[in-house]
Length: 196
Image (cartoon, rainbow, N blue to C red; front, side, top):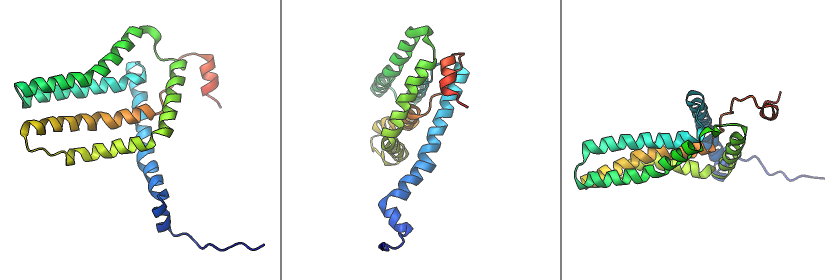
């Protein structure tokens, strides 16, 4: 039985297929950022003893507070009132999430919450790979392509760019990152997740 000789595929042909490009992006950009986000969630949980899903809304409120202070220094009058209204609208989902977590109170972060967050992170990690890369690329390009001649409009666009750059990629990667393991004396948790 004879086999057909198909020749050797050149590396340039593989680049044309997109395999090397996607593998390179996955290996050197996406995976390190996922590991960094997982480390950030772990250190947040260890230092604050708060559930890891509260890091993103807390960071969003920190960035919006910085932008509120900066807008008070740069604009005044109606543009300042408009910027305050826009920043408050951007802050409402984060405030609502933090308030609902405070109302839930003593539930804390245990094995059940870890399993739920982990399952959601795995689903987002697999299904939203391209979304993370697009958000990352958009956040890298946005400050350079957003040019407006009107000074007040330019300040608004600069503020929107800063907000997106500081919160968009972080949210995308925190949602897909491996959550930290809760440190509680749950035997089922230890038996299931600490094999070997």
